[in-house]
Amino acid sequence: MRAWQMVGMALALLASTAGCARLGERRVPVVEQPIEITLILDKPAYRPGEPVMATVTLVNRSGRALDLRALDAGSVEFYFSRQGDPEPMKRQAIFSRLEPLGAPAQLVAGQSLGRTFLLTRVTYYGGPLSLMAIYEPGDLPRPDGGEALARASSNKVDYEVAGEPIFEREPNSGLIRREEAIRLAGAKATPLGRVLGGEALPFQDELGFDKWWVNIRVGRADGIEELTGWLVNPYTGRVLRARVPFNPAHAADPRLGGEPPSAPALPIFQ
Image (cartoon, rainbow, N blue to C red; front, top):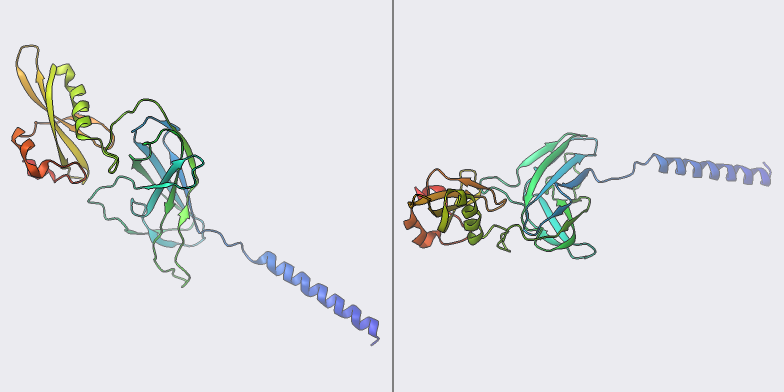
């Protein structure tokens, strides 16, 4: 075989090999995050102190079933910041003390998990803000022997905080203060007569959430003073009429003088 023929065959073989390599590269699937997390807020704007409802949805994009952690206040972390600020602040969603955080879950390929969380500490600052969620799937081993799933970050959602404060909250817990609970209950009691004063005690309800139990003294139009009882949600500010007021003697009990979330369970008042 002549030299020029040997060179031609070598070049043809090289080209063929390069083509196979390129073809092989095209056949290699792109490695993507197996789980996708999205975040949606209930409103685009809030007043200072207003609670935020944040819906988190987790989608399995891996093509196979995944063993991971259920969506809860332990597996989902929220980070908010002023828009343009590179250092976001971590906030935890409200959860019941009776909820077992970190429960295992399995997500079928193509299916989704969703949960709406209540946040009380992301409207503390005014102005344009941003919020995102990070999901921690845990260190559960993969069935195929691969590495554990990595943390997944959601989209960033912009929102605005402006206007007059809606609730006065304790900055560390994000719960409505005792005096604020008395004010809210007093506003509900006003139609019954002139508000003469009030007291409040924290307690934990049967679902494991904090509540304020508020007594409001009302001077009725007939001259009779009435003691009325109210339940104030320290997360949302919702006020409901209680069946009975609490025993006023409990207001001097040193065990009951703290602020939630150190609230005792309800039976201590009975």
